[in-house]
Amino acid sequence: MARRREKLPPDRSKALVAMTVNGERVEAPFEPHKTMLEVLREDLALTGTKHGCELGECGTCAVLLDGKPVLSCLVLGLECEGRSVETVEGMAGPEGLHPLQKAFADLGAAQCGYCTPGFLLTAKALLEENPRPTLPEIRQALAGNLCRCTGYVKIFEAVELAAAWLRGEAAEPRKESLYGYDFDESGLLPSHPGPVGAVLAAAREAAVDEGGDKPRPYRAKAR
Amino acid sequence: MKPFTLVRPTSLAEAARLSAASDAEIKAGGVDLVDRMKEGIDSPKTVVSIVEIAGYDRIEPGPPARLGALATLARIADDAGLRKAYPALADAAAGAATPQIRHMATLGGNLCQRPRCWYYRLEEFECRKKGGDDCFARDGENRFHAVFDTDLTCCCVHPSATGTALLAYGASLDVVGPKGKRTLPIDRFFHRPVKDPTRENTLTAGEIVAGVAIPAPAAGSRSAYRKLKEKESFDWPLVETCVAFTLSGGTVRGARVVFGSVAPTPYRSMAAERALEGGTPSDALAKKAAEAAIAEAKPLSQNAYKVTLAKVELERALRQAWA
Picture 1 (cartoon, chains in turn orange, purple):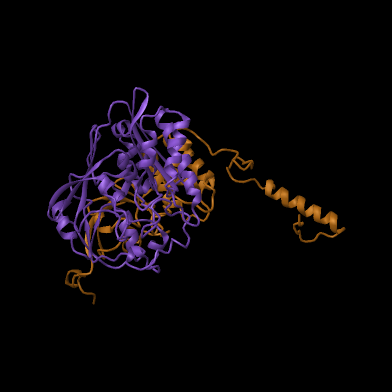
Picture 2 (spheres, chains in turn red, brown; picture 1 turned 180 degrees about the horizontal axis):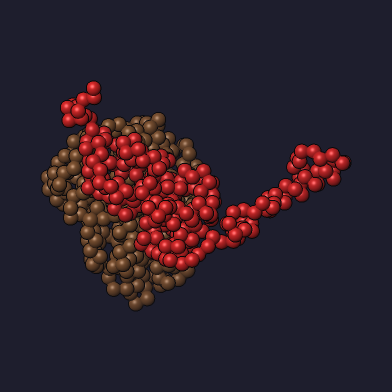
Protein backbone atom coordinates (compact mmCIF):
# COMPACT_ATOMS: atom_id res chain seq x y z
CA MET A 1 0.00 0.00 0.00
CA ALA A 2 1.29 3.40 -0.89
CA ARG A 3 2.27 5.55 2.01
CA ARG A 4 0.38 8.76 2.44
CA ARG A 5 2.29 11.68 1.00
CA GLU A 6 2.69 13.62 4.26
CA LYS A 7 4.38 10.63 5.86
CA LEU A 8 7.22 10.73 3.35
CA PRO A 9 10.41 12.20 4.75
CA PRO A 10 10.97 15.70 3.34
CA ASP A 11 13.60 15.81 0.64
CA ARG A 12 16.10 18.13 2.23
CA SER A 13 18.16 18.38 -0.90
CA LYS A 14 15.38 20.35 -2.57
CA ALA A 15 13.91 23.78 -2.12
CA LEU A 16 10.20 24.38 -2.53
CA VAL A 17 9.71 27.51 -4.57
CA ALA A 18 6.43 29.25 -5.35
CA MET A 19 6.19 30.83 -8.76
CA THR A 20 3.77 31.33 -11.59
CA VAL A 21 4.48 29.25 -14.67
CA ASN A 22 2.36 29.88 -17.76
CA GLY A 23 -0.29 31.51 -15.60
CA GLU A 24 -0.45 28.60 -13.19
CA ARG A 25 0.69 29.08 -9.60
CA VAL A 26 3.01 26.23 -8.71
CA GLU A 27 5.20 25.21 -5.82
CA ALA A 28 8.13 23.56 -7.49
CA PRO A 29 10.58 21.39 -5.58
CA PHE A 30 14.09 21.46 -7.05
CA GLU A 31 17.73 21.37 -6.09
CA PRO A 32 18.64 24.90 -5.09
CA HIS A 33 21.60 25.31 -7.45
CA LYS A 34 19.59 24.61 -10.60
CA THR A 35 19.11 27.08 -13.40
CA MET A 36 15.58 27.94 -14.46
CA LEU A 37 16.19 26.01 -17.67
CA GLU A 38 16.91 22.86 -15.67
CA VAL A 39 13.94 23.44 -13.38
CA LEU A 40 11.58 23.86 -16.33
CA ARG A 41 12.81 20.80 -18.18
CA GLU A 42 13.68 18.42 -15.36
CA ASP A 43 11.33 19.32 -12.52
CA LEU A 44 8.32 20.77 -14.32
CA ALA A 45 8.49 18.55 -17.42
CA LEU A 46 8.26 21.59 -19.69
CA THR A 47 10.72 20.48 -22.34
CA GLY A 48 9.64 23.05 -24.91
CA THR A 49 12.43 25.31 -23.63
CA LYS A 50 15.64 24.07 -25.22
CA HIS A 51 19.17 23.58 -24.00
CA GLY A 52 21.50 25.28 -26.45
CA CYS A 53 24.94 26.68 -25.73
CA GLU A 54 24.24 26.95 -21.99
CA LEU A 55 26.43 30.07 -21.92
CA GLY A 56 24.15 32.85 -23.05
CA GLU A 57 25.26 32.93 -26.66
CA CYS A 58 22.44 31.32 -28.65
CA GLY A 59 19.07 32.44 -27.24
CA THR A 60 17.33 29.10 -27.65
CA CYS A 61 16.54 28.87 -23.92
CA ALA A 62 14.80 32.27 -23.86
CA VAL A 63 11.71 32.48 -21.66
CA LEU A 64 9.70 35.45 -20.45
CA LEU A 65 10.36 36.42 -16.85
CA ASP A 66 7.75 38.92 -15.71
CA GLY A 67 7.13 39.54 -19.40
CA LYS A 68 10.74 40.25 -20.39
CA PRO A 69 12.78 37.83 -22.48
CA VAL A 70 15.71 36.42 -20.52
CA LEU A 71 17.99 33.43 -20.94
CA SER A 72 16.81 30.66 -18.65
CA CYS A 73 20.22 28.95 -18.79
CA LEU A 74 21.69 31.86 -16.81
CA VAL A 75 18.79 32.50 -14.40
CA LEU A 76 18.84 30.63 -11.10
CA GLY A 77 15.58 28.85 -10.32
CA LEU A 78 15.59 30.15 -6.75
CA GLU A 79 15.56 33.70 -8.04
CA CYS A 80 12.29 33.08 -9.85
CA GLU A 81 10.51 32.85 -6.50
CA GLY A 82 7.29 34.84 -6.67
CA ARG A 83 7.86 35.72 -10.30
CA SER A 84 6.01 34.87 -13.47
CA VAL A 85 7.66 32.62 -16.05
CA GLU A 86 6.25 32.02 -19.49
CA THR A 87 7.46 29.24 -21.76
CA VAL A 88 6.46 28.18 -25.25
CA GLU A 89 3.96 25.74 -23.72
CA GLY A 90 2.02 28.73 -22.42
CA MET A 91 1.64 30.49 -25.76
CA ALA A 92 -1.29 28.59 -27.25
CA GLY A 93 -4.66 29.52 -25.75
CA PRO A 94 -8.12 27.94 -25.76
CA GLU A 95 -8.58 29.25 -29.32
CA GLY A 96 -5.55 27.38 -30.53
CA LEU A 97 -2.10 28.46 -31.51
CA HIS A 98 -0.80 31.92 -30.75
CA PRO A 99 -0.73 34.01 -33.95
CA LEU A 100 3.07 33.90 -33.87
CA GLN A 101 3.01 30.12 -33.76
CA LYS A 102 0.52 30.01 -36.62
CA ALA A 103 2.55 32.44 -38.70
CA PHE A 104 5.77 30.47 -38.08
CA ALA A 105 4.00 27.29 -39.20
CA ASP A 106 2.30 28.86 -42.22
CA LEU A 107 5.48 30.49 -43.51
CA GLY A 108 7.89 27.69 -42.80
CA ALA A 109 9.78 29.87 -40.34
CA ALA A 110 10.95 26.76 -38.51
CA GLN A 111 13.09 24.05 -40.03
CA CYS A 112 14.74 21.87 -37.41
CA GLY A 113 12.73 23.84 -34.86
CA TYR A 114 15.28 23.85 -32.07
CA CYS A 115 15.58 27.63 -31.92
CA THR A 116 11.86 28.23 -32.45
CA PRO A 117 10.64 28.46 -28.81
CA GLY A 118 13.23 31.15 -28.07
CA PHE A 119 12.27 33.09 -31.18
CA LEU A 120 8.54 32.83 -30.43
CA LEU A 121 8.82 34.13 -26.88
CA THR A 122 11.25 36.90 -27.75
CA ALA A 123 8.98 37.95 -30.62
CA LYS A 124 5.94 37.82 -28.31
CA ALA A 125 7.61 40.24 -25.90
CA LEU A 126 8.45 42.54 -28.82
CA LEU A 127 4.89 42.58 -30.15
CA GLU A 128 3.42 43.22 -26.71
CA GLU A 129 5.63 46.29 -26.40
CA ASN A 130 5.54 47.38 -30.03
CA PRO A 131 2.53 46.16 -32.05
CA ARG A 132 3.84 47.66 -35.29
CA PRO A 133 7.56 46.96 -35.42
CA THR A 134 9.61 47.82 -38.47
CA LEU A 135 11.85 45.18 -40.01
CA PRO A 136 14.99 46.71 -38.40
CA GLU A 137 13.18 46.66 -35.03
CA ILE A 138 12.30 42.99 -35.49
CA ARG A 139 15.89 42.19 -36.46
CA GLN A 140 17.17 44.06 -33.42
CA ALA A 141 14.73 42.38 -31.02
CA LEU A 142 15.67 38.94 -32.34
CA ALA A 143 19.40 39.69 -32.57
CA GLY A 144 20.17 37.41 -29.64
CA ASN A 145 18.50 34.34 -31.14
CA LEU A 146 20.57 32.19 -33.44
CA CYS A 147 19.01 30.03 -36.17
CA ARG A 148 21.29 27.84 -38.24
CA CYS A 149 18.64 26.61 -40.71
CA THR A 150 16.30 29.26 -42.00
CA GLY A 151 18.51 32.20 -42.86
CA TYR A 152 16.09 34.31 -40.75
CA VAL A 153 14.09 35.78 -43.65
CA LYS A 154 11.03 33.63 -43.04
CA ILE A 155 11.27 34.25 -39.31
CA PHE A 156 11.19 38.00 -39.82
CA GLU A 157 8.30 37.63 -42.29
CA ALA A 158 6.40 35.46 -39.82
CA VAL A 159 6.77 38.07 -37.08
CA GLU A 160 5.50 40.76 -39.47
CA LEU A 161 2.53 38.56 -40.40
CA ALA A 162 1.67 37.73 -36.78
CA ALA A 163 1.96 41.41 -35.87
CA ALA A 164 -0.60 42.22 -38.56
CA TRP A 165 -2.94 39.48 -37.30
CA LEU A 166 -2.58 40.71 -33.72
CA ARG A 167 -3.49 44.21 -34.88
CA GLY A 168 -6.69 42.71 -36.31
CA GLU A 169 -5.65 43.10 -39.94
CA ALA A 170 -6.73 40.45 -42.45
CA ALA A 171 -3.18 39.80 -43.64
CA GLU A 172 -2.27 36.71 -45.61
CA PRO A 173 1.03 34.97 -46.07
CA ARG A 174 2.96 36.57 -48.89
CA LYS A 175 2.37 34.82 -52.17
CA GLU A 176 5.98 35.24 -53.09
CA SER A 177 8.98 34.86 -50.89
CA LEU A 178 12.44 36.30 -51.25
CA TYR A 179 13.52 33.21 -53.11
CA GLY A 180 11.16 33.71 -56.01
CA TYR A 181 8.87 30.73 -55.56
CA ASP A 182 5.25 31.27 -56.50
CA PHE A 183 2.96 30.19 -53.72
CA ASP A 184 -0.50 28.87 -54.47
CA GLU A 185 -3.53 29.91 -52.41
CA SER A 186 -2.71 27.43 -49.68
CA GLY A 187 0.55 29.24 -48.99
CA LEU A 188 2.38 26.01 -49.71
CA LEU A 189 5.01 25.45 -52.34
CA PRO A 190 3.52 24.49 -55.70
CA SER A 191 4.13 21.07 -57.12
CA HIS A 192 5.81 22.23 -60.32
CA PRO A 193 9.58 22.62 -60.15
CA GLY A 194 10.76 25.89 -58.71
CA PRO A 195 14.14 27.33 -59.53
CA VAL A 196 16.08 24.53 -57.83
CA GLY A 197 14.07 21.87 -59.65
CA ALA A 198 14.54 23.74 -62.93
CA VAL A 199 18.29 23.85 -62.43
CA LEU A 200 18.44 20.14 -61.71
CA ALA A 201 16.20 19.31 -64.69
CA ALA A 202 18.38 21.39 -67.00
CA ALA A 203 21.46 19.66 -65.64
CA ARG A 204 19.94 16.25 -66.30
CA GLU A 205 19.13 17.27 -69.85
CA ALA A 206 22.66 18.51 -70.37
CA ALA A 207 24.00 15.18 -69.12
CA VAL A 208 21.78 13.34 -71.57
CA ASP A 209 23.04 15.53 -74.42
CA GLU A 210 26.64 14.81 -73.58
CA GLY A 211 26.26 11.12 -72.95
CA GLY A 212 24.19 10.02 -75.91
CA ASP A 213 20.70 8.68 -75.71
CA LYS A 214 20.76 7.14 -72.22
CA PRO A 215 20.18 9.30 -69.13
CA ARG A 216 22.91 8.90 -66.54
CA PRO A 217 23.45 10.33 -63.11
CA TYR A 218 24.32 13.99 -63.29
CA ARG A 219 27.85 14.94 -62.33
CA ALA A 220 28.90 18.52 -62.02
CA LYS A 221 31.46 19.47 -64.63
CA ALA A 222 34.81 20.60 -63.36
CA ARG A 223 35.42 24.21 -64.20
CA MET B 1 28.09 23.63 -12.60
CA LYS B 2 29.01 22.42 -9.13
CA PRO B 3 26.41 22.72 -6.38
CA PHE B 4 26.65 25.85 -4.23
CA THR B 5 24.69 27.59 -1.54
CA LEU B 6 22.77 30.65 -2.65
CA VAL B 7 22.36 33.29 0.00
CA ARG B 8 20.11 36.26 -0.48
CA PRO B 9 20.93 39.02 1.99
CA THR B 10 18.61 42.00 2.24
CA SER B 11 21.27 44.72 2.46
CA LEU B 12 24.48 45.44 0.60
CA ALA B 13 26.38 45.77 3.89
CA GLU B 14 25.38 42.23 4.78
CA ALA B 15 26.24 41.07 1.26
CA ALA B 16 29.67 42.67 1.60
CA ARG B 17 30.29 40.86 4.87
CA LEU B 18 29.14 37.52 3.43
CA SER B 19 31.13 37.85 0.22
CA ALA B 20 34.41 38.73 1.92
CA ALA B 21 35.06 34.98 2.35
CA SER B 22 37.46 33.54 -0.22
CA ASP B 23 35.00 30.85 -1.37
CA ALA B 24 32.13 33.30 -1.98
CA GLU B 25 31.20 35.22 -5.10
CA ILE B 26 28.84 38.14 -5.59
CA LYS B 27 26.07 37.61 -8.09
CA ALA B 28 23.92 40.32 -9.62
CA GLY B 29 22.40 39.47 -13.03
CA GLY B 30 24.50 36.31 -13.08
CA VAL B 31 25.34 36.52 -16.78
CA ASP B 32 29.09 36.34 -16.24
CA LEU B 33 29.26 34.45 -12.94
CA VAL B 34 26.93 31.61 -14.01
CA ASP B 35 28.94 31.36 -17.23
CA ARG B 36 32.18 31.01 -15.29
CA MET B 37 30.68 28.45 -12.95
CA LYS B 38 29.46 26.39 -15.89
CA GLU B 39 32.82 26.68 -17.60
CA GLY B 40 34.44 25.31 -14.46
CA ILE B 41 36.80 28.25 -13.92
CA ASP B 42 35.01 29.36 -10.74
CA SER B 43 33.33 27.08 -8.21
CA PRO B 44 32.28 29.21 -5.26
CA LYS B 45 30.79 27.39 -2.27
CA THR B 46 28.61 30.38 -1.57
CA VAL B 47 26.94 32.64 -4.11
CA VAL B 48 25.80 35.90 -2.57
CA SER B 49 22.95 37.21 -4.67
CA ILE B 50 22.42 40.95 -4.49
CA VAL B 51 20.05 41.27 -7.44
CA GLU B 52 16.92 41.38 -5.29
CA ILE B 53 18.19 43.97 -2.79
CA ALA B 54 15.83 46.93 -3.01
CA GLY B 55 16.93 50.43 -3.82
CA TYR B 56 19.90 49.87 -6.10
CA ASP B 57 18.22 49.78 -9.50
CA ARG B 58 17.39 53.47 -9.74
CA ILE B 59 18.25 55.61 -12.74
CA GLU B 60 18.38 59.33 -12.01
CA PRO B 61 19.53 60.82 -15.30
CA GLY B 62 20.25 64.23 -13.81
CA PRO B 63 22.56 65.64 -14.92
CA PRO B 64 24.51 64.94 -12.79
CA ALA B 65 23.36 61.32 -13.10
CA ARG B 66 23.17 58.75 -10.33
CA LEU B 67 22.72 55.14 -11.30
CA GLY B 68 22.18 52.17 -9.04
CA ALA B 69 24.52 49.28 -9.74
CA LEU B 70 21.55 46.96 -10.25
CA ALA B 71 20.06 49.03 -13.08
CA THR B 72 19.95 46.75 -16.10
CA LEU B 73 21.69 47.56 -19.36
CA ALA B 74 18.29 47.47 -21.10
CA ARG B 75 16.94 50.22 -18.84
CA ILE B 76 20.10 52.31 -19.18
CA ALA B 77 19.88 51.97 -22.97
CA ASP B 78 16.21 52.98 -23.00
CA ASP B 79 16.35 55.93 -20.59
CA ALA B 80 15.59 59.09 -22.57
CA GLY B 81 17.19 61.41 -20.00
CA LEU B 82 20.44 59.45 -19.93
CA ARG B 83 20.53 59.29 -23.71
CA LYS B 84 20.20 63.05 -23.92
CA ALA B 85 22.88 63.92 -21.36
CA TYR B 86 25.21 60.93 -21.79
CA PRO B 87 24.63 59.48 -25.27
CA ALA B 88 27.87 57.49 -25.22
CA LEU B 89 26.77 55.58 -22.11
CA ALA B 90 23.34 54.84 -23.59
CA ASP B 91 24.96 53.62 -26.81
CA ALA B 92 27.48 51.49 -24.91
CA ALA B 93 24.69 49.82 -22.93
CA ALA B 94 22.51 49.37 -26.02
CA GLY B 95 25.32 47.76 -27.97
CA ALA B 96 26.37 45.25 -25.32
CA ALA B 97 25.50 41.58 -25.69
CA THR B 98 21.97 40.62 -26.78
CA PRO B 99 18.48 41.92 -25.94
CA GLN B 100 17.81 39.04 -23.56
CA ILE B 101 21.12 39.52 -21.75
CA ARG B 102 20.56 43.27 -21.47
CA HIS B 103 17.36 42.53 -19.53
CA MET B 104 19.42 40.53 -17.02
CA ALA B 105 22.83 42.21 -16.99
CA THR B 106 23.40 44.98 -14.47
CA LEU B 107 25.63 48.04 -14.58
CA GLY B 108 27.67 46.80 -11.62
CA GLY B 109 28.06 43.38 -13.19
CA ASN B 110 29.10 44.87 -16.49
CA LEU B 111 31.87 46.82 -14.72
CA CYS B 112 33.04 43.85 -12.62
CA GLN B 113 32.74 41.02 -15.20
CA ARG B 114 35.83 38.93 -15.93
CA PRO B 115 37.56 39.00 -19.33
CA ARG B 116 36.58 36.87 -22.30
CA CYS B 117 40.09 35.73 -23.25
CA TRP B 118 39.57 32.20 -24.55
CA TYR B 119 42.55 30.84 -22.64
CA TYR B 120 41.15 32.26 -19.41
CA ARG B 121 37.70 30.88 -20.22
CA LEU B 122 38.97 27.36 -20.91
CA GLU B 123 39.34 25.27 -17.80
CA GLU B 124 42.30 23.42 -19.36
CA PHE B 125 44.56 26.47 -19.58
CA GLU B 126 46.09 27.42 -16.25
CA CYS B 127 46.88 30.96 -17.33
CA ARG B 128 48.30 33.74 -15.19
CA LYS B 129 44.85 35.13 -14.55
CA LYS B 130 44.05 31.84 -12.85
CA GLY B 131 47.31 31.79 -10.91
CA GLY B 132 49.40 29.94 -13.49
CA ASP B 133 52.77 30.87 -14.95
CA ASP B 134 51.95 31.52 -18.59
CA CYS B 135 50.04 33.96 -20.73
CA PHE B 136 49.07 31.62 -23.55
CA ALA B 137 47.71 34.43 -25.67
CA ARG B 138 51.04 36.21 -25.91
CA ASP B 139 52.43 33.71 -28.40
CA GLY B 140 49.19 31.87 -29.15
CA GLU B 141 45.89 32.72 -30.77
CA ASN B 142 45.72 36.42 -30.04
CA ARG B 143 43.80 38.10 -32.83
CA PHE B 144 41.20 39.51 -30.41
CA HIS B 145 43.65 40.39 -27.65
CA ALA B 146 45.32 43.58 -26.49
CA VAL B 147 47.23 45.98 -28.71
CA PHE B 148 48.00 48.52 -25.94
CA ASP B 149 49.74 47.72 -22.65
CA THR B 150 50.86 44.39 -24.06
CA ASP B 151 54.12 44.42 -22.10
CA LEU B 152 52.30 43.68 -18.82
CA THR B 153 51.64 40.25 -17.28
CA CYS B 154 48.37 39.54 -19.13
CA CYS B 155 47.24 40.60 -22.59
CA CYS B 156 43.49 40.03 -22.30
CA VAL B 157 41.13 42.87 -23.13
CA HIS B 158 38.72 44.33 -20.61
CA PRO B 159 35.15 43.45 -21.62
CA SER B 160 33.16 46.29 -20.05
CA ALA B 161 31.40 48.54 -22.55
CA THR B 162 29.89 50.77 -19.87
CA GLY B 163 33.34 51.04 -18.26
CA THR B 164 34.69 52.51 -21.48
CA ALA B 165 31.97 55.16 -21.56
CA LEU B 166 32.07 55.91 -17.82
CA LEU B 167 35.84 56.41 -17.96
CA ALA B 168 35.34 58.96 -20.73
CA TYR B 169 32.70 60.77 -18.65
CA GLY B 170 34.93 60.80 -15.56
CA ALA B 171 32.39 58.95 -13.41
CA SER B 172 32.93 57.82 -9.84
CA LEU B 173 31.74 54.65 -8.13
CA ASP B 174 29.98 54.25 -4.79
CA VAL B 175 31.51 51.22 -3.15
CA VAL B 176 30.13 49.33 -0.15
CA GLY B 177 32.48 47.04 1.73
CA PRO B 178 32.74 45.16 5.00
CA LYS B 179 34.30 48.27 6.58
CA GLY B 180 31.84 50.79 5.19
CA LYS B 181 31.37 52.97 2.14
CA ARG B 182 33.81 54.82 -0.04
CA THR B 183 33.82 56.75 -3.29
CA LEU B 184 36.18 55.48 -5.96
CA PRO B 185 36.94 57.60 -9.05
CA ILE B 186 36.69 55.34 -12.09
CA ASP B 187 40.24 56.35 -13.10
CA ARG B 188 41.37 54.30 -10.10
CA PHE B 189 38.87 51.45 -10.46
CA PHE B 190 40.45 49.46 -13.28
CA HIS B 191 43.57 47.49 -12.38
CA ARG B 192 46.51 47.35 -14.81
CA PRO B 193 48.13 43.91 -14.54
CA VAL B 194 51.63 45.29 -13.99
CA LYS B 195 52.38 42.61 -11.40
CA ASP B 196 49.07 40.95 -10.47
CA PRO B 197 47.05 39.61 -13.42
CA THR B 198 44.44 37.82 -11.28
CA ARG B 199 42.06 40.75 -10.99
CA GLU B 200 40.74 43.55 -13.19
CA ASN B 201 39.72 46.12 -10.60
CA THR B 202 40.93 47.59 -7.35
CA LEU B 203 38.02 46.47 -5.17
CA THR B 204 39.15 44.65 -2.05
CA ALA B 205 37.62 41.49 -0.58
CA GLY B 206 33.90 41.92 -0.01
CA GLU B 207 33.65 45.29 -1.71
CA ILE B 208 30.65 45.75 -3.99
CA VAL B 209 29.89 48.49 -6.52
CA ALA B 210 26.67 50.05 -5.26
CA GLY B 211 26.21 52.85 -7.74
CA VAL B 212 27.74 55.23 -10.23
CA ALA B 213 27.76 59.01 -10.23
CA ILE B 214 28.42 60.86 -13.47
CA PRO B 215 29.26 64.57 -13.34
CA ALA B 216 27.07 66.97 -15.25
CA PRO B 217 28.52 67.69 -18.68
CA ALA B 218 29.78 71.26 -19.08
CA ALA B 219 28.07 73.61 -21.54
CA GLY B 220 28.97 72.69 -25.11
CA SER B 221 29.88 69.14 -24.20
CA ARG B 222 30.00 66.49 -26.90
CA SER B 223 30.47 62.75 -26.70
CA ALA B 224 30.27 59.65 -28.88
CA TYR B 225 30.67 55.91 -28.50
CA ARG B 226 31.40 53.48 -31.31
CA LYS B 227 31.68 49.73 -31.31
CA LEU B 228 33.23 47.81 -34.15
CA LYS B 229 32.47 44.11 -34.33
CA GLU B 230 32.75 41.27 -36.83
CA LYS B 231 29.09 40.32 -36.78
CA GLU B 232 26.22 42.73 -37.22
CA SER B 233 23.68 41.20 -34.85
CA PHE B 234 25.67 40.77 -31.66
CA ASP B 235 29.30 40.27 -30.93
CA TRP B 236 32.09 41.23 -28.63
CA PRO B 237 33.82 44.36 -29.90
CA LEU B 238 37.04 44.35 -31.87
CA VAL B 239 37.53 47.97 -30.86
CA GLU B 240 35.35 50.34 -28.88
CA THR B 241 35.98 54.06 -28.97
CA CYS B 242 34.55 56.70 -26.70
CA VAL B 243 35.28 60.42 -26.77
CA ALA B 244 33.98 63.21 -24.56
CA PHE B 245 34.98 66.88 -24.72
CA THR B 246 33.58 70.36 -24.72
CA LEU B 247 33.50 72.70 -27.66
CA SER B 248 34.29 76.13 -26.33
CA GLY B 249 34.52 79.02 -28.78
CA GLY B 250 35.01 76.50 -31.59
CA THR B 251 37.92 74.70 -29.93
CA VAL B 252 38.16 71.35 -28.22
CA ARG B 253 38.71 71.45 -24.44
CA GLY B 254 39.09 68.77 -21.82
CA ALA B 255 38.94 65.83 -24.20
CA ARG B 256 38.86 62.33 -22.82
CA VAL B 257 39.60 59.56 -25.30
CA VAL B 258 39.02 55.97 -24.22
CA PHE B 259 39.38 52.76 -26.20
CA GLY B 260 37.70 49.54 -25.13
CA SER B 261 38.68 45.97 -26.01
CA VAL B 262 42.26 46.95 -26.82
CA ALA B 263 43.98 46.56 -23.42
CA PRO B 264 43.59 44.78 -20.08
CA THR B 265 41.72 47.89 -18.88
CA PRO B 266 39.59 50.41 -20.73
CA TYR B 267 42.47 52.36 -22.25
CA ARG B 268 42.64 56.12 -21.91
CA SER B 269 44.81 57.69 -24.60
CA MET B 270 46.45 60.73 -23.05
CA ALA B 271 48.41 61.21 -26.27
CA ALA B 272 45.20 61.62 -28.27
CA GLU B 273 43.79 63.93 -25.59
CA ARG B 274 46.89 66.16 -25.77
CA ALA B 275 46.66 66.24 -29.55
CA LEU B 276 43.04 67.39 -29.37
CA GLU B 277 43.42 70.07 -26.69
CA GLY B 278 42.75 73.52 -28.11
CA GLY B 279 42.29 72.23 -31.63
CA THR B 280 39.59 73.22 -34.08
CA PRO B 281 37.35 70.35 -35.21
CA SER B 282 38.48 69.15 -38.60
CA ASP B 283 39.36 65.94 -40.37
CA ALA B 284 43.01 66.90 -39.97
CA LEU B 285 42.64 67.23 -36.19
CA ALA B 286 40.89 63.84 -36.00
CA LYS B 287 43.73 62.28 -37.98
CA LYS B 288 46.36 63.91 -35.81
CA ALA B 289 44.70 62.63 -32.62
CA ALA B 290 44.25 59.13 -34.04
CA GLU B 291 47.87 58.94 -35.14
CA ALA B 292 48.99 60.11 -31.71
CA ALA B 293 46.82 57.44 -30.09
CA ILE B 294 48.16 54.52 -32.08
CA ALA B 295 51.78 55.58 -31.75
CA GLU B 296 51.62 53.89 -28.32
CA ALA B 297 50.29 50.59 -29.68
CA LYS B 298 52.31 47.39 -29.39
CA PRO B 299 50.26 44.73 -31.15
CA LEU B 300 50.77 40.99 -30.73
CA SER B 301 51.55 38.52 -33.50
CA GLN B 302 48.03 38.31 -34.97
CA ASN B 303 46.33 41.59 -34.18
CA ALA B 304 48.11 44.49 -35.84
CA TYR B 305 44.84 45.01 -37.75
CA LYS B 306 43.25 46.23 -34.50
CA VAL B 307 45.66 49.18 -34.45
CA THR B 308 44.36 50.28 -37.83
CA LEU B 309 40.78 49.79 -36.64
CA ALA B 310 41.46 51.90 -33.54
CA LYS B 311 42.88 54.70 -35.66
CA VAL B 312 39.96 54.75 -38.08
CA GLU B 313 37.38 54.40 -35.31
CA LEU B 314 38.80 57.29 -33.31
CA GLU B 315 38.64 59.53 -36.36
CA ARG B 316 35.03 58.45 -36.91
CA ALA B 317 34.08 58.95 -33.26
CA LEU B 318 35.53 62.45 -33.24
CA ARG B 319 33.74 63.41 -36.46
CA GLN B 320 30.52 61.93 -35.02
CA ALA B 321 30.91 63.90 -31.79
CA TRP B 322 31.59 67.29 -33.31
CA ALA B 323 29.23 66.95 -36.29
